[in-house]
Length: 229
Image (cartoon, rainbow, N blue to C red; front, side, top):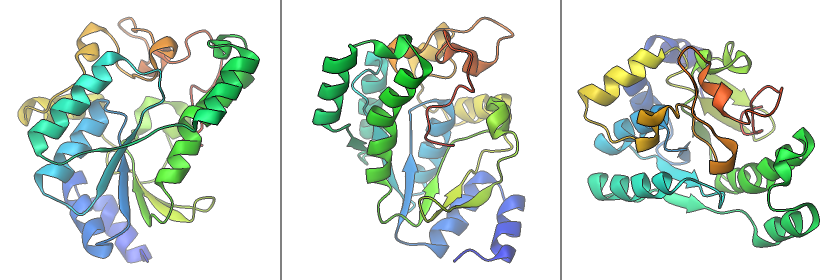
């Protein structure tokens, strides 16, 4: 259990110290989902460098950029710890593609959300089975939907704690950590891809645009896939 006192302490601690506290409270059952983006590379570095008892995993949707696989391989080599990979169910993908089309997500928000559910949400739910704490790389300034998210919260639907150690970090904070600690990044970031999802659903953003503007750019939506709603 995380008491109110623990939650208040977590709000005051740095991300690294917060991860250490959570690890001491839950020596088993802590997981971290990484998309291999900049925020997640920060947390991955903190976890692996300090050898914290956290299972790190990623979701391979089958539509990722080549650069994702390249960075995943480099992470495994650098930290000498493998990130676990979860895939969507073959039957789900086959049914969706055969009935609606390989790129049906362009045709409606409903189709896109169904694709995200099959390729992301269902594999995530499998990865979170039996977990007690789910660590994320969410930041408040990423989108309106995340502005009021707390550092630590109880996820009623999944029956676990959700810990957001970077929720109050700025993008500059992220860049400073990556540079100071020489953390590896997706080469896509240098080409204007700040928030990176699946290859057909992500475009580079222009200067001044919200980073999430590059995700599902053809939609007028909340720019969420369902993992954090």
